[in-house]
Image (cartoon, rainbow, N blue to C red; front, side):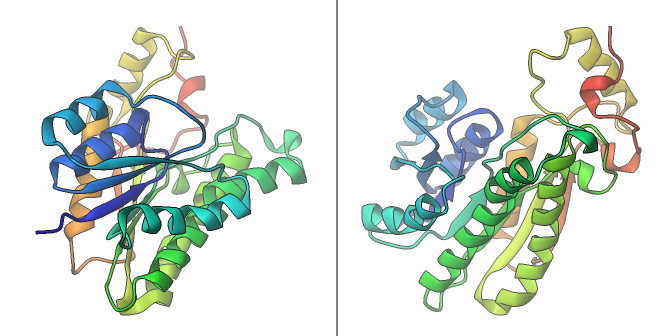
Length: 253
């Protein structure tokens, strides 16, 4: 029996690695996109070793439309078939309030976080020839209650969120398109451990999501044949509690 094939952008690191690891355990072969040469995070390396899932890495700069256009054909050429699942996980992130916004910075953010996912989805559906692939966009819980700290990033993720429903309608029965909206999950060095603990207590569930929980939602949407145009918020309930600033600016030591 042929295993299903998933293309995961940004699939080697952080939350992307957790998603890829979960899909390996779900029986998928993996086309793992990266921007440049890099090793897989341990959670993914362990899953690949454990499952023996076939995988291959594909380098592409999503800021370059030509490289976006070349990504899916490269995957099809390597695996000999069209992916059954596309996870648009890769993202560009930057701080910046409205006064810092420039047309060039906004264009760069929109290219990576909105245009590239949409064009990959279009290419996948066009190549699927009667099969119905699943597409899962990774957005952000802040699409519901925006904050002023990362204006360009927030605009691009909001655009991808709206694209999820729009493409679900446009593709109709040719593809299912859904989204997962994480909250703060893997804190960077900008956060202290104590700050993260205090932030978790502010969530309606009193806890932050884990990468594995985000991967659970992606895996469920991948097989939920009656679901399209939906967004699952995996955020500890953060989208229910509007905040004045981004998490990194709250509960500081």
